[in-house]
Image (spheres, rainbow, N blue to C red):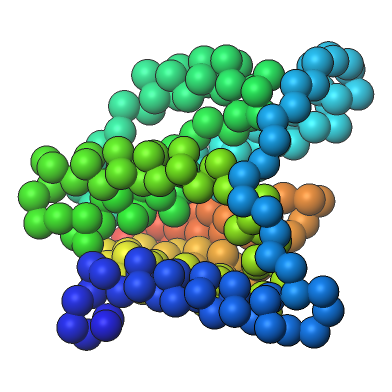
Length: 233
């Protein structure tokens, strides 16, 4: 399917993975009952506290900025889009304030979604790729209603099945991003280091690899530029 209809490969892979997971759960050992579709909504009164701000809000803000907003802006840049940083942060920040009481605590640029919607796989016309983002948003709303079912299938089905199927969607984007990152000789080392650190999955003081990949890449970039400028002098 990837060679025949690349744009449909991810959807078909995820669909087959869901079917296999359902079959595995239904006919596997144990009670063999499938998780119920849909999740009942239950209102929980938000309670603000200093410990929650320090222990939850600040870490979530750091993680969101480091693993979603900054990589999301960078991804858009690799595909030729220049996001309005100040206004975008204002809109996503206000959206987070409004959505946080309802569980939407991290409204952001969503790096992976940005990569999928901004890549050539979303359409040849760069000006019309926003439609892919709209479709992705509608898909989030639909699948959000059956999150409990999907999560149960992920944990009760064959290990790594759905994750591997979802990874098919990123193959084309990964190839395009790597090509754009290393196409120029200047800064190639920084791009490779960034990729390797991100792929390592390292986590330090509770912050994931995406943040440390950016730190490592910027450090290598700064060192290489400094050394080359001194050598030129």
